[in-house]
Amino acid sequence: MSLIKRALLLAVATTASLVWAAPGHAAESFRVVSVNTTGCNSGNFGMTVAKAELDGSPTPYIVRTVVTASGLAYMNEQASTNTNGLSGWNLFNNFSYGVVPNPGTWPIPSNRQLRIDFTLERPKGTILHSWRIVVDGCNTGNLLYNNTPAADSDGDFVPVPRDKCPGLRATTLNGCPARTLTIGYDNPGQRFIGWLVAKGFPNLYSHRVVTIWRARTGPDLRIGRATTTARGNYSLARARHAGLYYALAAAVGNVVKERSLNLRLR
Image 1 (cartoon, rainbow, N blue to C red):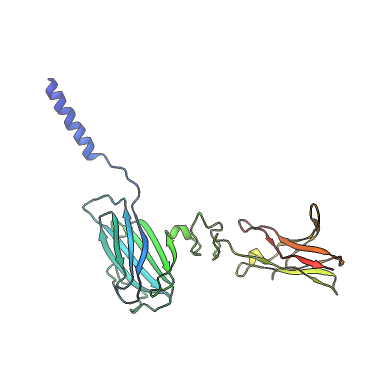
Image 2: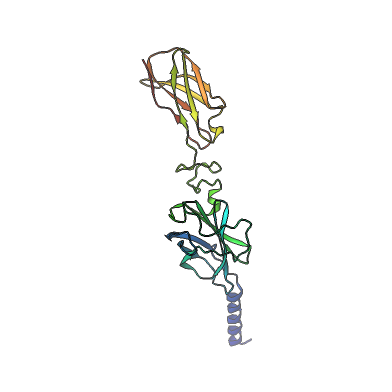
């Protein structure tokens, strides 16, 4: 075989491998960057969205937009896109993706928490990426959540990894329920008393160990331990002695230990 033929065959083989090799790329994404305009009539509420890693195929992606408020669906739109970058995205009275069992009547009620779910699909029904935003109302547009649904499995609007207590729905910055521990002294009964409170989370206050400590120079002195009742109250019988006391409740999983305010007995 001549050198020219060898070169031609090599060029054809190289070109074929470039055409038919499956190109690798990062996962497609569709996310909301900002809320730009507010309003509760069709077309009023507008956002900027960012599309990335779309593969440029002639077959467009389907973007489904579902809008719900107070259990009613106000939008179930099927749109298409095949370009990356920033673009505007508005809410419309549109149900082109399909009928819903619980349609709402526009305008969307003001001052109602609004959830907007996006799915990037190809073909229709095959979800490649999901994104969710929650705002405090169509008329206000303050973002309560802006991330993937999977990052907020407990629905407290605190995404992982910032949510230190996934599975426990809480409104604190770290996603863990807040607890409060009190301490007092029942003089006739000669006992320390108090409450461990974690509203809505009985597993965090019911039948939990509370330790009473006396503050002093050097290591504090442990006075004793008590177990809370099912309602969260506790008591520990001890003779009254002057001093500065406090109570501690042990940590529960990622919910940190709780310390009461100080109690001074004279």
